Length: 490
Ligand code: NAI
Ligand code: MG
Image (tube, rainbow, N blue to C red; front, side):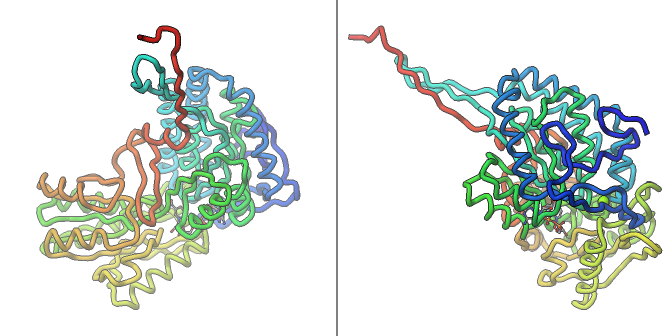
């Protein structure tokens, strides 16, 4: 295997932590395995970081922030981000394969997520030299101006469902704004976050600007979220862990952005184009085996079109190819045995509560597979109508009129995304205005891009990622008032 900047060309990064520009074992010397969910085989062993390693990483990030990063002109940060984009682009296939091996995700989907990562670097490269303040009118005897300064050391605790994408989503705006970063990737899929270290180093980012501490949530994650040296924390993951992170950060009054899950509705009215709606609904729940925070996991369908829509959905569901990520199927395995069992538990709970299981079979000797599943006849009080399943399972509920649809749409603790399928523009705009969701999509699911601000309310969390709005998470506003003396009027 040839070496390129420390990372073997085969794509598996060295097993160490990445701290202050160096690969280093955990202080405890402990390691753990990350598996390929398609085969249940070990892909690599990585360092099991703990509190002492987090300390080292935060110290390195602090030194880089106070030193080379602070001195860097915004246009130079833009250049380094652009270089990171080009380097990642040139190695996109290697990263896609690594992501697929570590998560089981279909190869095409990994390719598309890596393209999205490249886009994050390009987008925020373009923003780096446009993060500007204002002057505030106080009259001729004062100059009042604001400066949008970086927060300092930013922490990023990321999930396994779109591993590199979740890192780049918050890292790129953080670096663009002049911060440094400590990343704690999910223990189930830490490899691409490690491999990114090499990309950023090759692009010219100074040592300490990007640090990665791999490890378990209760160890490295807890240490990072409670660390007093963190100036801003971004967490993406589950609601219970979000609460724990918030409590730990609260000790230090560290600002936190939370991007938690959802139970996002796709609402189909009786005037919708049913063929198109069926395509979008299937995409919204089966892409990534349903393991996206904004998966359209509840179908709310008008009773008048329930039959024809379900027929179309059942046909599409039966056609999906389920298989190992490297075979590039439509649907890969879930991330882990635990996640598979969790999802199967929800399917059982739905069945016992009286839901009708419409489609699905996946029989593989190995791997954490769950067949794409439609749960028809779900009632609003059922567990499967309210809780995030995070698997390829669609809960189907019906409604009779717009008011009932609106009520059902808002009948969970979440408020992340919503999909609306109708040909009536007024109805679409009414729902887009009123539905409890931070991200609304009309007649196309998973639409929008890096440019579109994304986030939720309620148990889905708060704060916005993507777009220019994300820069607010990684900047602080300083106001300076200057008294101008010397030509006082009589
Ligand atoms: P999790 O929320 O526990 O894990 C997310 C990240 O938090 C990982 O990096 C993990 O190591 C870290 N973490 C865990 N405990 C921590 C702690 N005490 N302090 C600091 N960091 C900690 O999610 P998990 O358990 O892997 O998945 C369970 C459920 O969470 C899923 O079934 C799904 O419903 C939801 N989830 C939602 C995601 C989203 O995108 N909103 C992503 C992943 C999971
Ligand atoms: Mg893995």
